[in-house]
Amino acid sequence: MQLANRTAIITGAGSGIGRATACRFAAEGACVGVADINDAAGLETVAMIEDEGGTGCFVHADVTVAPEVETMVSQTVDAYNGVDILVNNAYVCDGDDILTIGEELWNRNIRGCLSTTLLCCQAVLPHMIDRGKGTIVNIASVNGLLGLGEEAYSAAKAGVISLTQNIAVRYGEHGIRANSICPGSIQTPAWTAVLEKDPDLFNRLSKWYPLKRVGKPEEIAAAALFLASDQASFVTGTNLIVDGGLTAGLKRMGEELVGEGTE
Ligand SMILES: NC(=O)c1ccc[n+]([C@@H]2O[C@H](COP(=O)([O-])OP(=O)(O)OC[C@H]3O[C@@H](n4cnc5c(N)ncnc54)[C@H](O)[C@@H]3O)[C@@H](O)[C@H]2O)c1
View 1: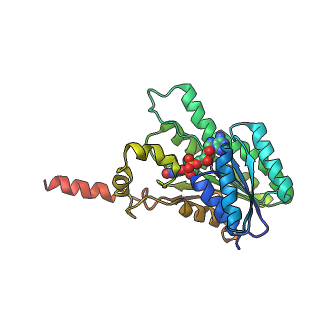
View 2 (view 1 turned 45 degrees about the vertical axis):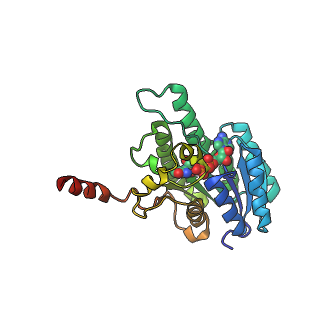
């Protein structure tokens, strides 16, 4: 049990990576505050945790709204006498390109990914500073590392990596660690609508991955567990890329160039 006697808040825990992380943390002994804007989805995650003998409670929160974030943290702190771990996972991703994106859409992405991370950190940090310990895991994206389109989302995710580094250097002396994770493509309900229109997408996408597949939510949960646990006691300010090798290099480019040259 890597997280026995710990309390974790996980945002966006009603689906995908957040749900997998909530279930994994609970299986490792954590009491989990399952935060989501979608009550039915969040309650389903709590039921999944309890079915496996774990402990979790649902906290309704739209993490773009500061008072709801404050309530999310105070409810979890009251229920479990403190908070040891925060996983910022909830997000918004509305794509458009640089010339056409309007200010409203830009702000929606920055708010939904980056400002939410700031708000949640601001709400938990005083509790962590008081206790002289705590760990934060921010879910960023490979979109925050290189140009893949979805400009506003990508800029927000790059900001999440920077914010994480600054939390790490500013609050390390209080025993607080902060790290980010950059997932590659992960098969979650976030892809449902796209896959309905283009059922072959993951097959084509998989070819770009050195491991020849997209990832599973449980694989990001495992990375989050490592960073949140004492296994990572000397790891802070880092960005863990969990992308099946996608961003490691451009071997496929070389193969295509050679192929084109022999045509
Ligand atoms: N799935 C991928 O391919 C992928 C790749 C890279 C990064 N990520 C990142 O992983 C994280 C999770 O993605 P996912 O694919 O599991 O998403 P998902 O759509 O499956 O789940 C997101 C959850 O967040 C909740 N949510 C959305 N806005 C919220 C808000 N304002 N307040 C509270 N809850 C809110 C939703 O209700 C939902 O339950 C995101 O930060 C995303 O950027 C995902």
